[in-house]
Image (cartoon, rainbow, N blue to C red; front, side):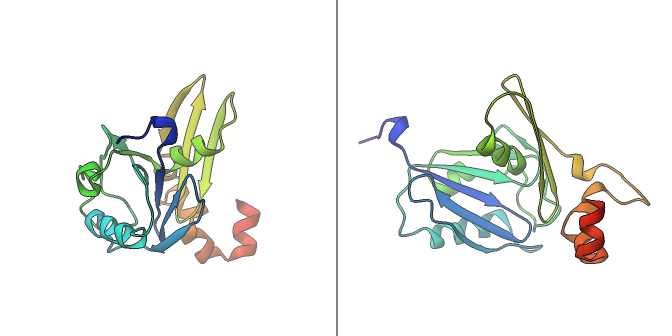
Length: 172
C-alpha cells in the first residue's frame, strides 16, 4: 500500500567532495562515507544502499555538487570521479528520486521566507538564491577570481589547506 505523501519517509543524500552524508527525515541519524576523486555515481548508490540497508524509506532526495537539469546531473563534478552526468538515480535506487544542486538543497533546508543568498563553505563553495518563491542554484564558486584561480580555490578546502586556518579565516 502506498503511503500518503505527508507520511512518506525521505532519505536525504548530500554528495560532497570529501564525504557522502545520508539521513532520513524521521530518525535524524546521520551516516556517512568518504567520497573523493574516484567516486562514481554507481559506486555512490552501492555504498548508500549498503549503509542504509537497515533503514526504511519511500523516496530519495539527492544533493549533487554541480548543475542539475531534468532531475539528472548536467556535468561531471569537479571533486569526484566520472559517470555522474546524465545518471538516472531513480532507476539505480528503484525509488522515486529528486536530484537538485547540493547548495540549493541546503538553502531550502534553512529557508524561512523572504530573500536568501546561500553560500556554503565545504570542500568547495556552494551557492544558491531564493527570491519570491523562486529557487535558483548558482555556480559562483567556479567563477574566475585571481591569478587564473576561482573563488572556490580561495575559500574552499584547498584554500584553507594552502593558506592555513588563521589567514584563511581572516580573508574569508
